[in-house]
Image (cartoon, rainbow, N blue to C red):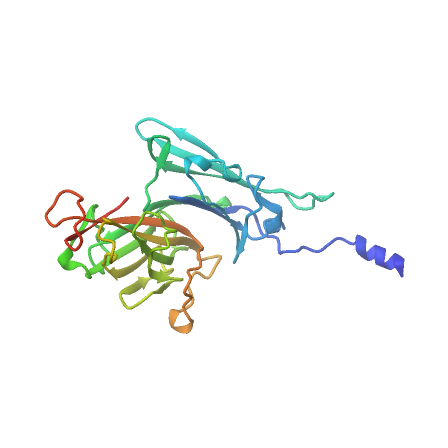
Length: 324
């Protein structure tokens, strides 16, 4: 009986997960974070056997993918989980960040083909006093799909003139305070990718500071659902562009604050590999807390005196929308 038990123990162990072809990677270069998605179980590797930069085992298992995030791109933390950075000066200064997702098996024998997903993100930057200032309403998405080739897309958030979403407004975006409460039309679009990729807005909110983590916030979209009847979602997760509108506003009891920031958490979903449509809002109970799953784009609004060319804040006079 003991011999049988030993023989059973020595038999090859079955796959813990179904091996996938490992020639696909999608990297989203957001203003303040980099998100890399690789196929779930590439060549049989489990999430706990893959690391970011060979240092951090911080991957998250999402439907169909393993997701790794570099959450901090500020100069003080360029080396997060082995991230390398390079500043390139000149007329068009930029930062380039490099990292990789690699397999690591500490067991005596290795049965899976090693994987190494090396990726980089390039940001146009204004360089001042050792600080990088990246455009906050634009992200870049890279897709490497093996033999099918590589694709690059610009993901941007813009204000449009009306609900037809044909014409984007140039910055700065000015709304007279007599029109506070009027409709503001926002479109988030990915250009350069095939129709299989869908733009998904998961959460949008406004804060009186540029920090998306500010606890003083007003929610507009929560888990892909409108927060109230002042917000209308026209399209979401169906095409390469998602659109919504909300009624313009300012924060009460913050008269000295001349700015309001709109933040939207967005992800690009591969419609051939995943079902991208959120659950219909009418068939579920909305969660009070947003469930983060993507990167954040930000747009700035400013309050200024009516007919004034300065940014002197006079509450209730005029509202200026200015893209960062």
